[in-house]
Length: 84
Image (cartoon, rainbow, N blue to C red; front, side, top):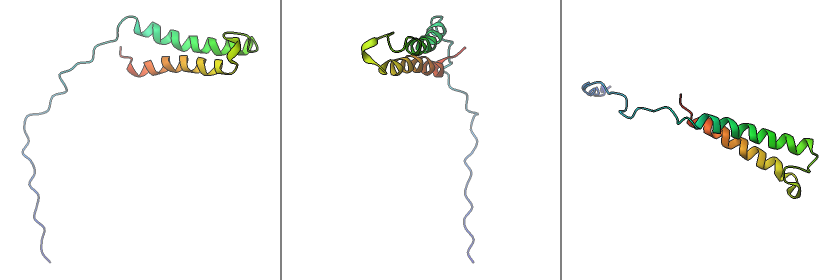
């Protein structure tokens, strides 16, 4: 049976350095805005349930829940970009 040719390994060059782009911490306003959005979304939904649909916006009905979730989701999406 024929033998397969051995593969040549590439020569090892200089060790690769991590990217020169260092990640800097977020601006001072980032964390307060992130937490505020999450809490505002929660307060929006709680207000809707406690007021039996009269507040925050009475004419849109259950869309108030969607608005509250969207606001809170914006805050949670900001957590993916948060660096200390």
